[in-house]
Length: 83
Image 1 (spheres, rainbow, N blue to C red):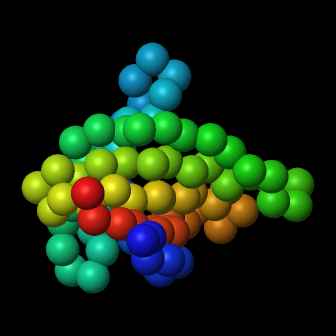
Image 2 (image 1 turned 135 degrees about the vertical axis):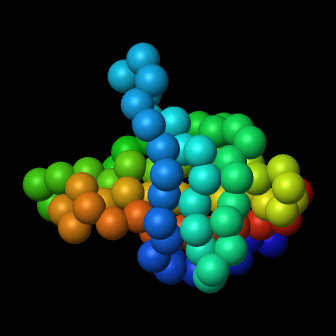
Image 3 (image 1 turned 90 degrees about the vertical axis):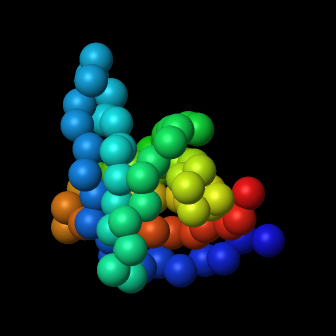
């Protein structure tokens, strides 16, 4: 069962071959290292988009959905679940 949280997070990543790669993120004073990006997609919001990323953090045994809002340039942890 997924837990929806919609909480702001800090993300570290980089662009590689025109794709954004997430390396890790900070949530509730804990660092989550991203082991794998499962998928990414975008959804329209007004005149802009929200970019979504499904990521696995093996060390914490969680799968997470992170989203980036182009309007306010903020990252959010949308939901997570144990793997």
